[in-house]
Each structure stands twice: as C-alpha cells, then as structure tokens.
Image (cartoon, rainbow, N blue to C red):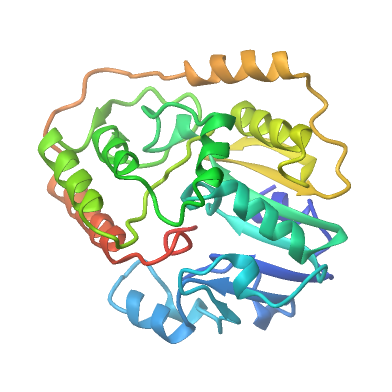
Amino acid sequence: MDRLQVLTSMFDASGVGLEIGGSMSPLLRKRDGYRIETLDHASAQDLRNKYKDDPRVDVARIEDVDFVTDGRSIADTVPRRRFYDYILASHVVEHMPDLLGFLKDCALLLKDTGVLVLAVPDKRRCFDVFQSTTSTGQILQAHLEKRTRHTAGAMFDHCANHAMRNDEIVWVAGSDAPLRLVYDLDFAFWRYRTARDSSDYHDVHAWHFTPSSWRLIVSDLAWSGDSPLKEKAFAESEGCEFYSSLSLTGDGCPLDRLTLVTRAIAEQREVQAGPAADAEAPASALEQLERRVRRLEAASSPLSAGK
C-alpha cells in the first residue's frame, strides 16, 4: 500500500474529518468528495502566494482553508466539540511546541469514536538522524511551560545536528550512503542567537521519534491520564515515516513499557554512517537547504512546515 492507503486504512474516510497542516498538498481534498475541513497557519490565498515561485509545488492543489490558526491553539481556533470522525495530520506533531496540548485539543474535537491519525517522521531515516530521541519528561515539561514557540536550544540542536545522506534529507531503511553534517557551528550559533533574541516563532523539528519511542510516549501520557488518547492502531515505518492512530476508546499499545524502552534504545542506535562524505555539499544541495532556511525564517506557526 502507498502512504495514503495506509493512513486511510486507519479511519472511515466517509465520515467528517479535519486535516491539520495540509498546506500546499492536502492528503484528502474537498474536490475529491471528502467531507473534510482544513486548519492551517495561513489562508489559501496566502499559501498560493507563498509557494507561487516554488517549482516543486502545484498551487492548484491548494484548497480553501476553513480555520486559520494565527498562532492560536487548535481548540481556540476550531469552534467544534465532539464533532469529527477523524483528524488527519501528516508531519505535524514534531513541529508542535506543546505536543501534549496538541493531543488534548484534538481529543476535544473528536467524537467519542473518532480517531487522530498521524504520519510521523522516523528520525533514523531523515535529517534528524543525529538527534536524541524525545522523552516523555520533555513533552510534559513543554506542556507545563505552556510553550507557544520552540526554545533557542532546540534551534541550535536542529542546525548543529542537521544531516544529509548522499545529499538527501530523507532515505529508506538500510541505506548505507554517506552521512554528513550540513551546517557549521557558526551557523548553528547564529540561529540560536536569532531565536534567543527574538519573540518571533522560528520553526524546527522540536521532537524526534523512532517508532518505539513514539509509542512509549503515547503510552506514558495515557497511563498518567495527562492525555485522553490511547493507541488504536500502528503501522511500522514505510520509507522515512511511520503511522499512528489514537482514540479516546483505543486499547493502548499491547507492548509493555520495558519492551518499548529497550526497543526505543535499540532503534536510537540504528545509525549506519556509511563511508565518509565530502565536507562540501554540491551547490544544488546547498541551494535547497538555503531555501528551506528561508522558509523556516518566514514561518509563523508550527503548522507552517507540516507535511
């Protein structure tokens, strides 16, 4: 199955849904007959203006946005309660300054039988490969602080440890192509100071997961009662991502905590560095990264980079 088939196998797509952070390429389109509402960081026209000069983006795929966050929480933005049969978010959770707050907000919007369906990047197979996996305690601390933007330290880590394998930012399992760090420390510290000295939102991958580390966090938060959502279904990594569905009535992960902890540690160690890479990236790769940095600097919401 392709990724869309995997995701749609986790919910009834004939129901009423909300897609979060679809941006320039929503997974489920209204024009295809889905009963779907959308939430994003910008209006459809603003998104079209943002991507009009990007040759990789088909602006015709951008659909009307029903709810624009403007930096507000999802619960404050969407005037629905116990309304949706499903909520769909692809590559969104890793951007959320307060991930637990995001889960709580989604729980408020879902019907009792509704599901939150997520595509989550696997840190082993993308530019986060050298990042440490996120812990439950870090998620709890961010919620305790009611974070609405990422820390300056997260910006430093994002830049200092940003990696490419064979000049790609994502790759498939088993690849042994060269791995290298992309940015030097001057750049990482510059980005750190920029975030430290500004009240603006600067987007990064604040959280980093392997399949088992994600399931561990979801299980911990459900066990404590901090999150009302439990695991309903899970699909292992396909390419650079894995898939998770959560619900109010889910049975939870069938694996015990010790198993999840040991698996998460083993997955964290799965880094095949491959042969040494050249220190200097090809110009085309650097140009792509510079465009990405410009998009990060222009971002105004954790949803702005969620794909």
